[in-house]
Length: 196
Image (tube, one colour):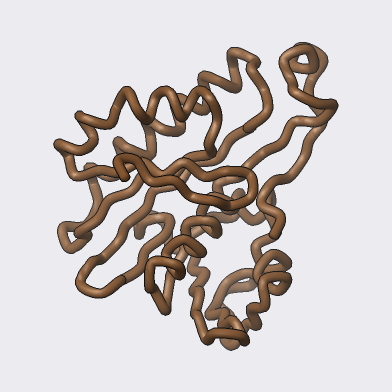
């Protein structure tokens, strides 16, 4: 499954890009990677809450169809919203445009998992891009302090990059004290949760 999208770097950013195009792991792609990770952890139903900008940056509906999902009910006026069911295993993904409900939410056994996600460029060392990656991780962690009280597992999910990897390990002890985990999402959708 394809999680990254490509874009032309600006003239200023070309020299700092590894390759001719910038590869972006958008926030919607991070949400979908986290949903797949939740299925692997035992979830049968996952709910994601993108906003309009997310679906402009990443075609959620096409990605779901490519992964074997069919939309059983629709919500809103976009081709993305509604309830999607994957044929091969019956897993359900609900795409709802309700801000403030958590980017990805699922119940697994006796745990309610609540994820705040951020996206970013993963193949550049341009200072502005590195700053946005750091800021995204800080924002995701900070948003979790306002998570619902019934959330038993809090995860900040961001693209895996040298910058976010380094920062995640630096933040581990303080995040652990606040019951917050950090998930680093690779371009292939693999999720590494820190602390493990």
